[in-house]
Image 1 (cartoon, helix red, strand yellow):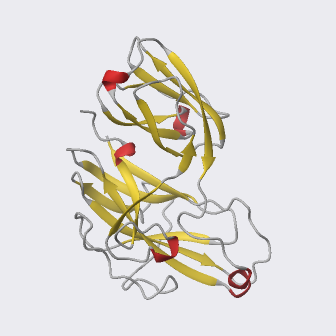
Image 2: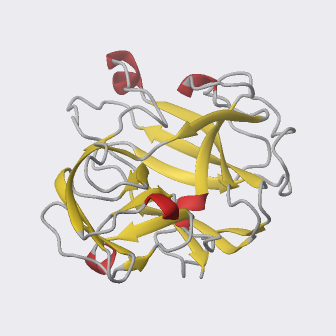
Length: 262
């Protein structure tokens, strides 16, 4: 079985059940609905490999290459360069990155079904929208608004722990709003019991102090710690939109940074 990678560290809504309504992700148990970062077109030539998610890529057509001699995958993001090849000889989940952390893809590999020859496949990446927060209304942009949403980060590896997990803001929004983070005090667990559900998305979670760490070495980085397989921790994202915003930002993305010790 493959060792844990960032492909096993997955995000979910709170709100219990199969909640995928952004405005209802305000505490409670972990939902079964996962939050994907970017979409990726399906592979057509490389058998035994399924793309589950994509992260941090420039939008456009990249390329996934499989080398049969080394049983390895290499990812080249759009407008980027090829990263280090990753050997995928064992079945499991893998994170395949472009050069110098310029985006990557999460894949699930069934090793017995890998091709017998080397192949390349074009993969078009697009951004997901309105997954953490919905678009602001004109009234909200005019008067200003603060919203709080709760999410779970989960170790979905089949058997192994993930160590020294950290969360940070790798890139804040280009718009007038700003996002910050708070790690809920609830200890790691299966997620059946979550943080107290807020009255609404405009209510701050009790005892919260939100921070904007921009790297894993920042003093305020969220230290999730170790998650054994199947465990999760809950965290909150605060979106603050000041009053008097009159200019819309069409692609107002926020990037959450994830780290785990190899």
